[in-house]
Length: 134
Image (cartoon, rainbow, N blue to C red; front, side, top):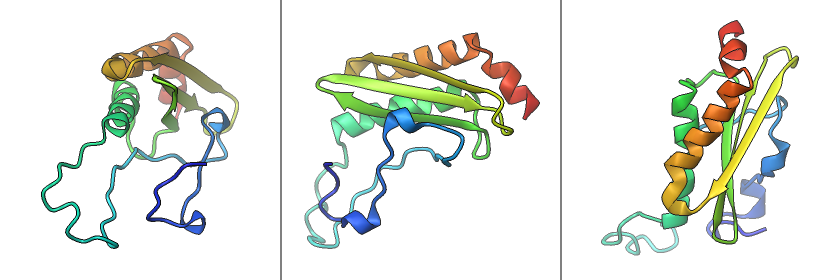
């Protein structure tokens, strides 16, 4: 598993995208930089990691299109398969009776379109009804 070298394995938990389920609590993605080891390293550098930015845009688009707040039973995650960004989203009934999952993949330049495609598919599967019931 690749991860941020500034953190030990004890400080990280990696959840495989295919393990989206009602047993986990997901939050909106956060981009952060840890400069504790080299405090001056980031002073003049822009904080922009192209792949991480594309993934974050895609995930946030899913959540935005679903109009999901912090307590909504929804999830969005992404990962890379070569040059392809794979975006996965889910909407869940709190009682576990329904679990809607959708996925789209494409180029980084299509990140927001991928997020919209995932949310559109979730709505086609009945996300509005699941969210209204919660």
